[in-house]
Every structure is written in structure tokens, then in C-alpha cells.
Length: 215
Image (cartoon, rainbow, N blue to C red; front, side, top):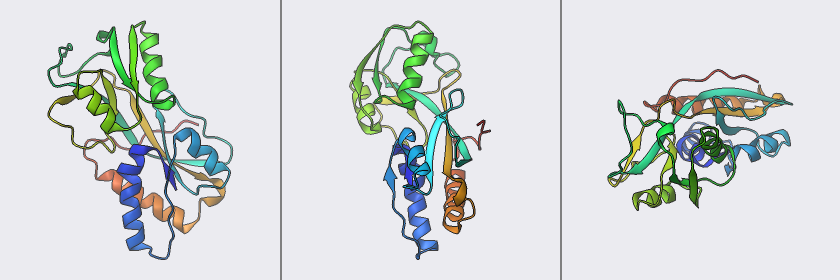
């Protein structure tokens, strides 16, 4: 089984514990992989089930021998220093108002591609001041006033008091999906894992229900 970092933290770790308790005969192996790595691994038979993400307005290709199960939608918030001076209207920040900012970004991939594309499509000036892939590093740099970052809600730990999460106008939203091979549809282990993933997701009070999937 594989998943992206916050998917491992928020979904696969709880899944692993419950699956071991309920189905002790199963041997589960978990790998942390990006969506771009997970889907080919599923197709090659290296991974039986993957949790992946893309964007509601920008989908990763998921055809050719795989089945997709929608898990839910994961909104992304802007994280800024607590003493920021960003314009906030009705409790939200508009990306249009974030010209000439320094950003703490991810390595190239689905998440970074969305941010840079959104900034460039709005003709906003920006500088990528740091490229890090862990939420704790992003938050630490943001807390020091080094730049702004985007963080999804799934798998997010409680933020320290020196930063604040601000909802965005028309927030970028990740689709969280489970993917397996067509031939694995009726495997009891896959069905058991899918059921527990949905169970864990339902415990997140601040995340919307399952998205529509367009293939």
C-alpha cells in the first residue's frame, strides 16, 4: 500500500493499526510515494492499493487498468505568521491580493504545480524562497516570517501559536482517491482496506464528503 505524506499520516497510519487488529492474518507493507509514483506502481503490480491526490480542477491521468474510488475533498489553507498584514475579507484571503510574496513551496509535483500555475495565471510576482516537503519545515519557516505556505487540512498537526491558517477565496482543493488494479476489485484485503479508509475519513469533521470522479 502506498500514499503521499499527509495521506500516510492522516489515513494509512490509522488504517494500518485497525487492519492489523481486525485482520491479523494480513501482512501490510506501507510505502510513502507521490501520486506520480503511486499510480505506475499500482499498474506494475508493485502496490495493491494507493491513496493519491490531485486537484478538483486538474486531474492526474488514472486510466489504463486501474479503478478509482473517491475518498473525499481536502481544502488547502494559507498559512502565515500570526502577526501578518495580509488583507482578510470576511475571514478569507484572496490569492489575487498576494502579489510579490515569498513562498515556501514543495518539490516539483502536483502540489507545487498548482501553486506556481495559479500565481502565473494571475500575473502575480513571486519568489520561491524555500523548497521543502514536510509540513513541520514549512510551518517553521513561515513562523520565522520567511514566507507564506499552503497546507492541506488532511494530516495537519495542530499549528503553533506563532502562525495562523487562513481560508482562501475559492480555495485550492485536493481530491483524495484510492486506486487499485482492475483485477484487484474483488480481493477481500483490498475491500477491507477501502472500508477502513472511508471509516477514518468520516472521522474528520472539517473535510467534505466524497468528490465526483471524472476519468
